[in-house]
Every structure is written in structure tokens, then in C-alpha cells.
Image (cartoon, rainbow, N blue to C red; front, side, top):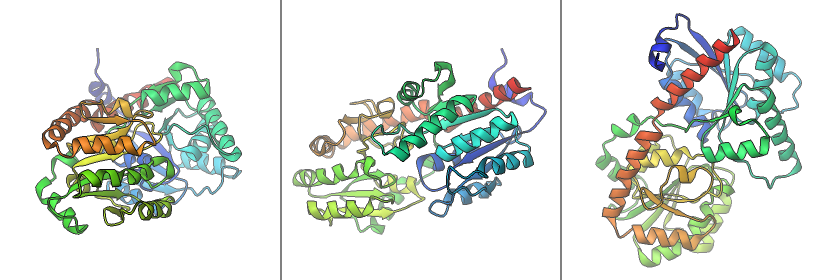
Length: 392
């Protein structure tokens, strides 16, 4: 039987894969684009990235261009833009795309339609488990995206099995239409760090004492990330462990409300907002416990990053999180929206560095086995080849 590596090497052609995404900000899907394309076999595949909007300046575009990858902007402000699909179709013709890979709402709808018109194989990755409590406009957008995924895409990739089951339920798609491929991260980014040096440097940057304990959350600041509940847990944590700081990495629309929550809870001197950062491995190297109090999540890449940093994890048992965090092994799981539960598990772990170290090592074993970007990209490469061959 020919393995994936041999199958790829046998290809005499180079295939253009058009990656279409809504924006290239600092969200999970956007950040994941960089390690995926970094590890894609460039002897066989030529990636071309098409972005539909500029979000936060599209910082990930700079990283992609630094790797020699062309990034094109086809601006689309509204889904109802009647020119969007023809413009995307013209772009796909121009770059001579052999297959299309869409991600996020606008791209799924418009990119999927353009691929269908041109008779190109297409695949989409779904990164979220959308709330069912939404306004009329959002629900209509969701219905349109689900229609597009069902009728325009050949295959849909879910980033967790829980998310796959969720989308099967809400989309009425046949089971073979949605396949699970976990998100992966580039482990080399964490293996080359001088952890002791970063530990001290980061703490100095944020005026955190060297002997303090640091709890860290990395997230776009949205209400559903649940950071408000961790802030509410801080008084109970500080009552037991006075030398604790909470570092919140990221920015977003919920920042103002989180600032007010910090004031209400009287923990302003112990909660630090770093803003948007591109040096996540460094910040995690200065962390003692990683906390993700999210209320909904398909498969949070930041948990893989925390595991690659050998950190114990405290997270809410929602979505695909239990597929990453094994309660009692590499971290602790709690129910969502429960400040007391967050405080209790943090208070149990903070005075037990040996237990934290054991959990961190267990996390490294899990991320190396299940969330290594090289393994995930190998699966994507075989998927692209099989779809392209099916259309020949």
C-alpha cells in the first residue's frame, strides 16, 4: 500500500490551493493559517491566500508573505454584495486554482459558491460551535452558511468530534460529509524557547514579582470567552494565595466590560491586560497555570499551545475542550460560568507545583500525539489530492 508521503512524491504536477478566509486578524482560525501553510509541501502544492476583509490590520498576512505566500485582497463588505461571487470566480480562474479551501462565514458562502460555479473541488473548515441563541440576522447568516456547506462544498472539516456531531445535527448533512481533523500547532516554536530567561523577562515587562504565581488566559475578548467569571474568581483565589496575578492576553469588544468587572471585584492591581500580542510562546513561558473559562468552544488552539508550554490547564468542560483536557491528568475541568469552581481548582493547584509539573508533562505528551501540526497537514494534503483526483 502506498503511504501518504510516497503518494505525494509521485505527483509530477504542482497544484494551486486557494485558501479563502474572511480576515487575517488574531483569531484562532486566522492564526492557524500560518503553521498550516508553513508545513504544506510546497513541492506539490502552491498555496494562494485570498482575504475578504481587513480585520485589526490583518497581521497574519505579514507572516504569510514572509513565507513567500501570495496574499490577495478581494474586498467584500456585505454577504449581499452581488459582485462578490463573480469577482471571486474571476480570481480563482486567474490563479488557475485546482482546489478551494474556505474558512469562516463569508468565505464559506461566497467562496463555496464560486468554486461550485467553476466546477472546482472545495473543502471548508468549521472552527466554531455557533450559539443557538442569536438574533434574526445572525440566524439567517447561519442558515445561509449551512446551506452553502451542504450544497457547495465536497467535504467539511470539523476541528473536534464534539463540533462534528453538533454540525451534523444542525445541518442535516450526511455523516460522510463532515470529517474530524484536529487543529495542530507548530511544536518547534515551544521547543526552542529559553524558558528560564523568558520567565523572568516577561514578568519584568509586566512588573510581576519573580516569586509570584501567574494565571494566564489567551483569547479574543468576547463575552463568550467567560473571562468575567475568572475575574470574579480572583478574590477567592487571592484570599488563599495573596501573591497571584491574572494575565489576560488579547483584545476585543468586551474589554471595556472586563475593565469594569475588575473594578467591581476590587482586583485592579492583580489583573493585567496585555492587549494583542504575537509572542504567545514567550508569555506562556512565564505562566504557572493556564486558564480558559470559555462558555463555548469547538477546539481552542490556545489549549494546545498551553500544553506545548508544559502548563497545567484549568478549563470549562464545553465543546471540544474535553477532547484536549483530561480531567485530573493534564488539567482540571469545571462547569462553565462558575467562579467558585474556577477558584476552587486554582486554589488546589497553586500550592502543589509537583502536581502542576506532572500535569504539564502529561499535556506535552497529548499535544505531541494528537495536535502536532505536521500530522494534521499530512492529512490535509491527502485530502486535497483525493478531491482533485475525483474531479479529473
